[in-house]
Length: 485
Ligand SMILES: Cc1cc2nc3c(=O)[nH]c(=O)nc-3n(C[C@H](O)[C@H](O)[C@H](O)COP(=O)(O)OP(=O)(O)OC[C@H]3O[C@@H](n4cnc5c(N)ncnc54)[C@H](O)[C@@H]3O)c2cc1C
Image 1: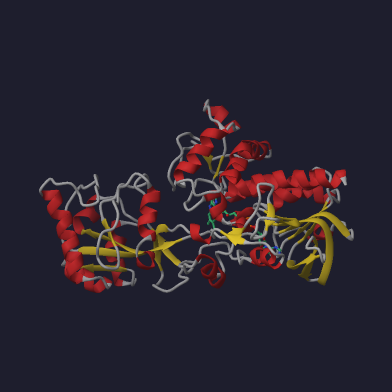
Image 2 (image 1 turned 90 degrees about the horizontal axis):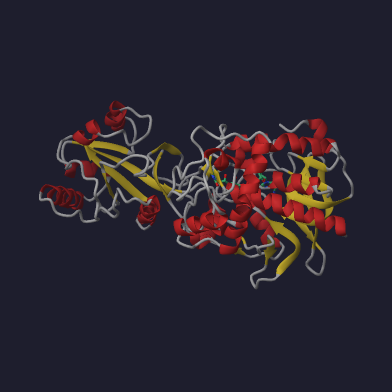
């Protein structure tokens, strides 16, 4: 909770910079604007500052960091850029990617100077997504909270000096525009009622929309299958930006993660369990099938992005892991931290788990086509036994599926971020459809869409890293502009 005494601060009638949203991007933006000499208003709708940093693993990447230096790792922004574009198949915005990688190292070094410490063995080349070629990826010892902890003392000091006014529990409900389209302030709604506040520049940093099922589906053309985003990610900033004339782009970059075991086949569902289905984390023994009972991907493909794309192409992004008693006995449990006993017995209590003494009976119980599953398993086994190449080129084929009982686990493709966002220039100005800027209006963080910096993929750290980095850069630049006015 932000201390009540600090929540008011100075309340001048006019601010140089108004930041909407006190989360991953908004905090550094407010902080660096204030450190640069601007008078800043930071408006946060929830009772506490932090936003998604409370939930995020906060994995970030950058080159030329003190953490790399400690390990003697040589790296460059260009190598970082090439790795990002390789992982997302050049689907991210190249200019925004450049802006991120050119300044990410400074961001991480600033955090390190302010107490940010990384997990043992970090930086690494990757964790849950396709890896970089160099060790530049790290997670704080307290995940996203390590980042928040690094920011708060400096922010606190700026509030005490009267440079930043923080309003928590206050929602920005409207952008004020002059007749010529310039954004001149915001309307806030909080415990003090409805107030108009004027500002020279307004920065939307209010997060994505992956907790708002209706808006998410409208902007992506894909239902929000699972609710895993931070609850305040309701898309307020997207609607504010739209209302001021901004354009929304990037919904077509939606990318699906595999392996979420839902509480039920309804959406948005809740996550009941999670199987990473990432061969770099666990070598797969089971096969994956779709609702037709057919395999669709090489389960041990070295690129988890390839597996993610495979899931994305299946009906309703659903997939089933199929395995037998021998695989259960000999492989690491597919759901981390679960015991083999739990995996074997979960079908007695949970609708996403099934077991049967034949492949056909398993298919019927799981709601899959029995004939199709039979021939899928038959094809897998025959090719293995006859020493022929796997239909999907799979290399890791430790055993056939032939020892009853057989098991299935139903899984759902899912995402924890939104890919659609406000179109911005490389100066982070909100743009209209035609490409002209909405004067005095900026956007940073997930409100510009994960598609902008992560592309149609999950590119290591390419949300938190640009959120903080753009916050720093924009805050500093807007402060300079306010001093020169
Ligand atoms: C579980 C999880 C793990 C993740 N892990 C990673 C990771 O390891 N690496 C990575 O790069 N990305 C990760 N992400 C994504 C990343 O964390 C987010 O994209 C990023 O933190 C979003 O930052 P933001 O500043 O845009 O939004 P937020 O940090 O959510 O901040 C937005 C703030 O705006 C406030 N707000 C919203 N509307 C209004 C309004 N109308 N008025 C005032 N305030 C408002 C909200 O309350 C919130 O505090 C993860 C996401 C999740 C959910």
